[in-house]
Image (cartoon, rainbow, N blue to C red; front, side, top):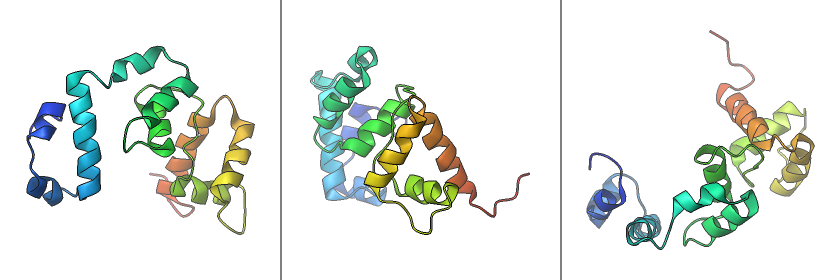
Length: 141
């Protein structure tokens, strides 16, 4: 496919998409996103000037994008500093470990705990993901 661009993605058929791990449903979502980017009905550049809540609302309005995807987009594509991806299993596990909990907290409990890190929840999430990937037994180089 070369560079990942909407037109190139749309050139892939179902067999090619399945071969690289796309389910039928995900392929449909991504085709809708690619088509919207090409025809201008989806304007990701416009999100830059919006506040987090409005940008999140617009993203969630795109078929196939939920709260987790919207918050991860805000964090990584838009560089927003105060988002918390709800329900992220790695964050839940790492947060439970960091807080010395006996059990992994629920998403709702984690959202409440993350309020303490406002306005830097994205920074906390990145640190927790880093911890998750390294684990408690990781050895520093």
